[in-house]
Amino acid sequence: MEKGLYTHISKGDIKHLPGRDAIWLQTPETTGGKYTTVSTTFYQPGVKVTPAHSHPYGEETGYVVSGHGKVLIGDQVFEVEPGSVFLFPQGVPHMVWNTGDEVMQLLFVYANGPKASESIPYEDVDFPE
Image (tube, rainbow, N blue to C red):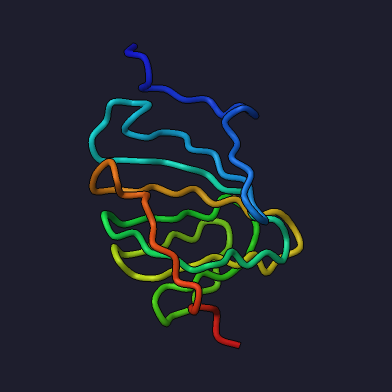
């Protein structure tokens, strides 16, 4: 098997961010692939990740592994739970909110090229009250 085609999560791979921990499982740099990036993120209870952001170079699909919360996609809000799958379209502001009382784990797949996971922040976007 070629190096980089298989990844196993380890504590050293964790990127600690405000209210959440992200693990980049696959990137074009680590696999040699051209189109896909995969990450998993663990959101602490009650955390609303700000600022909202968008991805100008690709789209992002999310899958809820565990926990409950909400996702904001443009001006629409969706309740999510284990098994929920959602799309953050290219260029559309979005954000995640763990409304539950347990850690929420999401798996993300970014597609359409090596820069697909790059983002632009939107400080003035928030969930409607």
